[in-house]
Image (cartoon, helix red, strand yellow):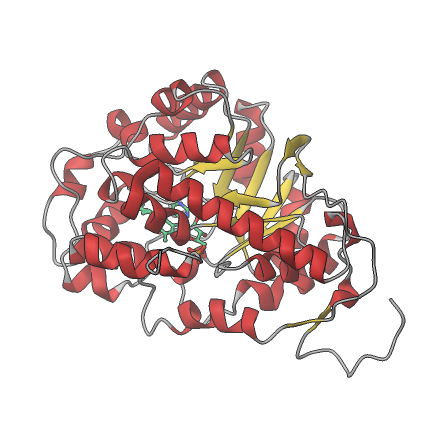
Length: 370
Ligand SMILES: Cc1cc2nc3c(=O)[nH]c(=O)nc-3n(C[C@H](O)[C@H](O)[C@H](O)COP(=O)(O)O)c2cc1C
Ligand SMILES: CCCCCCC(=O)C(=O)O
């Protein structure tokens, strides 16, 4: 079939045709000049793979462990808000597809589905992404609900004391349709703000009024005091913050620029990954998201020290185009591409991927042995 979808990028054009402009723009665009949005993709393209040949790759095992959970592959689903704008089953469809792929889904604090409804879709390893709202007691209750619903970790997003300056959302006067809300925080926040027109996007107005912009590394200890779940910090972009994160007691770090939706002109995540891996020195696992669109991107991130990657927009586009089946296909395409990348680089398993399998702009011309 000539119109068959063969890579995850192709879902974006189809999602654009299918979605109302306001929703597509919300998913697709970034902050300000969108320099970082382009750079997240281009920085991956500048990295070269150094394959080894004549290696027996007749048995390839792509599985890995994340926080002690066995996964089929080092590719996971990033938290993305408001998935019911893409498809009426929203996060529920994503949860089913992610479990079928035997990997982890992170449910957003801005989800349109409750923790309990996501849990009811069936077994699966799920983490909960947390924004700390001003209503601290309410936040503690949501964290407890996540625990009770069987979520396995908290992903604290540290890069959003306010919303990034997203010009498309401002021009569109983004608002949430009346039948949708941020389901898990409905009781502890004023979600009518999300449904009301304002002179900026309603998300920015909501964040300004509801999100606690005073949070610091001390909040990791606060979270430790209210949950026994492991805590990951999301949004780290410097070695300095990576060191502070480890010192604060997190169980893992996600190198992320929020899909280029917060501060523009920050580097691509893949460009700062090594700095962070070096600062962490193996004390906790380091993950990456931002611009992962190919199995070769996953390979590059692992070669530069990531323990796994998360994908955001490709999942949402798959969801928009074909619901659960679309998300399944996105995850399968990335899985299959990663398998080919492994084999053609002479690796049988994730642990075989070494730093010497990639060349970056910071590297001298390599002549060293593997
Ligand atoms: C539509 C959309 C909504 C998002 N919502 C959240 C969110 O609620 N919480 C969060 O921590 N990150 C959120 N993110 C950022 C993603 O978790 C992730 O960092 C980013 O999408 C990765 O980049 P990628 O889209 O290029 O894969 C969102 C991203 C998008 C595209
Ligand atoms: C609760 C504040 C609004 C966050 C919107 C979701 C999000 O993170 C995004 O990037 O969009």
